[in-house]
Image 1 (cartoon, helix red, strand yellow):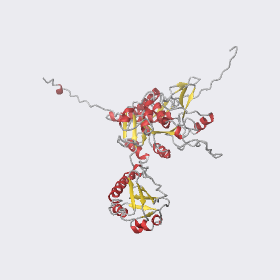
Image 2: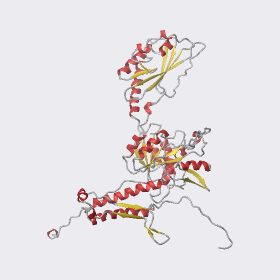
Image 3: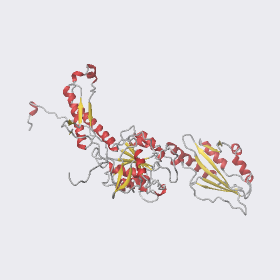
Image 4: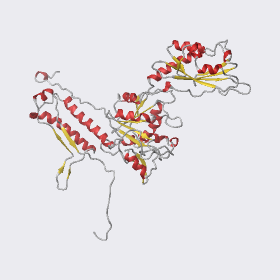
Length: 524
C-alpha cells in the first residue's frame, strides 16, 4: 500500500563519489630484457605478488642461466618485510630487430632452396649452418672448376625481395659485381694447401639492421687438411635480438599506475644517463647499481682526475646510485649475482616504509653482501652522492641515502607524496560539491584542504610538528595563506581561477649523525 509521501515531500539523493587516487609511492618497477629461453612471452608490463609468479612468467631466478629480471625479483622478494607486489616492465624487440628477423627468415629460406642443392654441383662441397648463419665451402679443385653452387640464384632471389647484399663495403647485385671484389680474386688464385679464407656477407633492407653471414672457404691438400671445423658457432651478430631503447619501455610502463621507483636490471650502464634524464621529467624515481665508478682493478686515474666517476652525472635529483661491489678491487665476474641488483634491494626495503615516516639510510638488506671499503673510499662515494652498503658493528646497513644530485631520497619521495595528496584533496573538493563559490567562504574551503593535507604530512612524519624556541615563542610546522575575495579583480573572478594560495612547511628531516661530548669528574 502506497504511503503517499510524494504528495507532501519528495527526496532525491545524489551520491557525491570522490575521485579515488591510484597513485602509489610504495612500489618498485624492475625494467630489463625478456627471458633468455624465449619459451614464454610475459606481459610487457605486469604486477607480481611473489617470486613463483615471476618464474611462471618464464624468468629464471637462479643458476648460471638466470635472467636479470629473475634475479632482481628474487632480491626484491627476499627483503623483510616482503613487498606486497613488484611491477616488471619487459623490453620489446626493436623495430629494426623485427625487420632483421624477416630478412633472416627470407634469406635462410632462399639458401635452402638454392645453395648446394643442384645435382650438377661440381668443384666443391657446401654446408650451411642456420644457427651460426655460416657457409663452409670446401674446394676439391681450383675455383675455375666450381659450377652451379646456387649462390647467384640466391643473390637474385634475395635482391628480388628488396634485400641489399654487400661485402667489403660494396653492394653486390650481379655476378659482374662479385667478380670485381678482392674476395673473388683471392679465391680464384687459391691453391691446394693455402690458408683457409673467411669472409663476411651482409644482408639488409630498409628499416633493418645488417644481418651478417660468415663464409669460410678451404682448399685442403693431402698434407694440409681444412682448418675450419663445421660446428654450431654463435652467429657473427644478432640484430634480430636487439631490444628497444629504455625510454620506449619506460613510456609503456608509465601507462600503468601503481609504481614509483624504476630499478634497472640487465640494462647496459651506457643507458643509465638516458634513463635518468627521462625520469627527471616524471614524478618518479630511478635507482641503478653502480659498478664502474672506481678505476678498474689495476688501473689508476690520472693526477687531478676524479677518483670516482659515477655512470650518471650529478645533475639528476630523481636518480639513486647504489655501489654494488664487495670491494673496489673485486673483478666483475666475482661479484655475487644479487649484488648486481643492490638497487632493487635498496628500493624494496626503503619503500616498505610509508612516505614521511622514514629515512632512506640505515636500512638492513637481505641477499646482498656488504662492501668492505676504506674510510677514503666511503668519503669518495659520499662526495659523489652514491649510496653504499657496509657493516657497522654487527649489522649490515645502507649509508648516505641521497640522490645523485645531492638531495635526500626520502625528501624527494615525501614531496611527491604531499603534492599528490594536496592535489587530490582540492580536486575532490570541486568534484563532490555542486559549487565552490568565489567568495571568502569558498576560498577558505580550499585553504582547509591545504591545511588538511599538511596535517596529514605531519602525521606521516614528513613535516615538523609545532615547536617552541627558548623564549617560548611558537614555531609552527606550517603556515598557509590565501587571498581575500575583495583583493581579487573582476577579471580574476571571471576566469574562475583561484591563485595566490600559498603554504610553507618545515621538513621534519632525519638525524644521520650525532656528536656527543662530555667529561668525567669527581664532582658536578
